[in-house]
Every structure is written in C-alpha cells, then in structure tokens.
Amino acid sequence: MDYAWDFSAIVQYRGLLLVGLLNTFKLAAVCLVLGLAFGLPVGLMRYARSPWLNWPATAFVEVFRNTPVLVQIMWFFFAFPIISPFDINAFTAAALGLTLNTVAFSSEIYRAGIQSIAKGQWEAGKALGMTGKQQLTRVILPQALRRMIPAFMNRAIELVKMTSLASVIAYGELMHQAKTISTIAFNPIEMYTVVALIFFALIAPPALAVQRYEKSLERRG
Amino acid sequence: MTEMLRLEGLVKRFDDLEVLKGIDLTVQKGETIVLLGASGSGKSTLLRCVNFMEVPSGGRVHLMGEPVGRDGRGAAISYSERDLVPIRARVGMVFQHFNLFPHMTVLQNVMEGPRTVLGLPRSECEARARKYLDKVGLGWKADAWPSHLSGGQQQRVAIARALAMEPEIMLFDEATSALDPELVGEVLDTIKELADEGMTLLIVTHELGFAYTVADRVLFLSAGRILEEGRPEEVLLAPREEQTQSFLRGHGRFRLPETPAQEQA
Image (cartoon, rainbow over all chains, first blue to last red; front, top):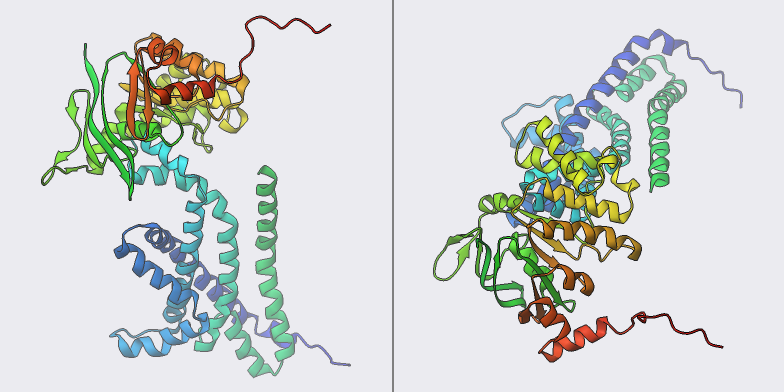
C-alpha cells in the first residue's frame, strides 16, 4: 500500500478547523452547564414520593435515555419547528437534543449519588432541627457530589463526542468543518484522521485524570 | 417540679404494623428514664416519636408543657413539618451509629447545628462547640476528622453535637450498642455526667448495670406497651412480670464470678 499522505490542504484550511473546534467547545460547554444544572431538580423529582413530581420526571428520563441522540437532534431540527411557533437554528436544535439528553443522564447520577449516602446522615441533620433543604445542601450534597465526580466527567467526555452528531444538521462544529474541507480538497483520509486525533487529544487527558481519581477514591475506601 | 414531656395514649403504626399501642408517660425536668425491652418491643420508636423523627399515628405528645400538633378533624392531629422542625431543635438525639458528618471536622460537626439551625454568629458557634467538646473531653480533637477517631470518641463528639443545641431533653438510642466493649465505658461516663448535672434524659440501652446506676425510673416495654415501670431496684432486681424476669435472665446468663475461681490442682 503506497498511499501518499498529504496534509497540506488541512494546513491551508486550518482557519475553518479552528472555527469548528470553537463551535464544538461552545456546544459542549452550553449543554454541560445546562444539563448538570437541570439534572439536579429532575433527579430530586425522581427521588420524590409524590407521583405528581415523580411520574413526569421518570417519563422524561426514560424517553431521553431510550432514544438515540441522533434522532433527538434531527427531531428538534426538523419536527419541532413544525409543531411549535419557534424557528430554530442548527445550534439551538443540537443544543436542545444534547442538553435534554445530558439532563436525563445526569439526573440519574444525582439520584444514585444521593441514594448512596446513608440514611443516618439525613436523620442526623433532621434531629438537629434542619429543614429538608438544609439536610440536602449542608449534609447530603457535599458528600454525594464528591462521589459523583467520576460519573459527571464520563458524561462530559461522552458529550464532547456526541457534539459531532450536530454535523448532520449542518452545525459548523469540528466534524462538519472537516466534511466541508474534505469535499473541497478531496482529502477525506487525511482530514478524518486529523479530526480523530483532535478528539483524542481533547478527551484522553481528562479521561485519564478520571481513572486516576477513581483509583484514589478506591484506595481511600 | 416542671413537666418536660407527657405522652398520652401514644400510638404508632407502620402500615398494618402497630408498633406502639398506647403509651402514657410523664417525665419531669432532670429525670433520667431508661427504656428496656426486647428488640421489636417499640422502645426505639417511642424515642423517635418524642422528637418527631416519626410522626405519631395517635395520641398526644406534650413537650415543655405544650401540646405538639394541631387539632384536625375529629380525633386526628395534624403535624406540619414547619412546626416540627423547631421542636427537633429543642430535643437532642444520639444515635447508635453516631452519624457524624464525615465531610466536616469534629469542630465543624459540633458547630453545624448552632450555625445552620439557630443561625448564631460564627464566633459564638465556635465558642459553644469548643465548650461542649471540652465537656466530653475531646477539645484536643477539634481539628480531627471523624474517620480518624475511635468509635467511643465519635459517639462523644455526637453527644457534643447534640449538646451544642442546648436542648431541653436528650434522647439516647442504643448509644453504645455499636461500640467495642472496651469503648462503652467512656460513653456511659459522659451520659452519667449529664444525668448528674440535671439534664432530662431518655435512654434506650442494653447496659443493665448502667441503667441501674443512672436511672431514676426504668420502663420495661413489651409489644408496644409499658409492661412494668418503677425505680431501678424494683424493675431490675425484683421484677413483677414474668416477661421482665425472663428478659433479665437472658441478659444475666453469663457473668463473671465475684471472686476468682480457685485454680484446679
């Protein structure tokens, strides 16, 4: 096999790639922040005894966990504007799909994390005279969040990878920019190799850091 | 005498299971009451109804002379969380498994109640926390983490944490049951000191010798009722009820002899 690798076009179009990289960051950051922020209330609703809180949250989580993200993004881009009065651009559609997906998964992380704290901790706070909210914010969450960090990091890594799905609705993130460049310069082999390397460079360091953190948690017991 | 606690016909049900079947009890200020009974007799549930960790299903609880809860329709009494939260702050509780907050130092554990619940200034909370840590003999451990303490020390910190709220009644729910035998004494000493100082105490314990020493009154519970009640020497040394007698026999089955046995030749 004597294929002559030629990366010159990629150097030439590096501006387009940089835009894609920034858009990938932007999409991932927005979805991560919103997803984690709304994941907590949804997770707490799943923990609630009242069916009025519990049932809608459960339905939401199951719908978004059990459908492909690609379908969700396509749905928000093509179907949502027809059944709603809003016009929606590619960024908003992708952000909606990925955020709601992140809410669904992170709510489960919150729920599992909170449930992993011994019942006696709630009781100790309650016996001191704390309100339910104080028990949660002063006693439970500070302990639970520490245990949730690895799971959240994995979610963040997953999210960065999933942003590439936004290329199907022509949002100009890394993958979409690469597709554009490879069409212009006829260099799909080099181009997608470089995209793979960029994603790897983005994701590998935090992924390794998580593994280390998990090991240190195990050691601490 | 000031009445601190009065239970009138207290009933507690969990679904179909009736754990307390009508408890009447009055506790005066400074009294030490020990609750005895087999597991499942309802003694822990009784304790947990006093500070409303569990909400009673029937009957009435009076704390510091005031009835708790509002009269609802008919005989039912309604309890709102908003009313119960300040009551819990006035009744201290110590648990079998300590339940210290592992993400806080010893000092922070003891400061937490005054700070978060009472909203006192930080400096005052710290002064209070140090005072009660000194009282349980652990002032020198203020900056340690709970996980670095022995079980006995953890339980003494838990006692200091409850005391820092300056409660009017203290509840001890099998406070020494999870401890290694050699650590039981230091916790019992701490509780006895509180009893001697005139704190009102309700204690669930299996330490009969301690009950005998510290109690003003001993209650024996069986199947959700107070079966026998009296001064410690009455209930523990001359029990009237067959069930109390067999409970005490079970506890005293193996004893060390008073004098060492002669070595076999």
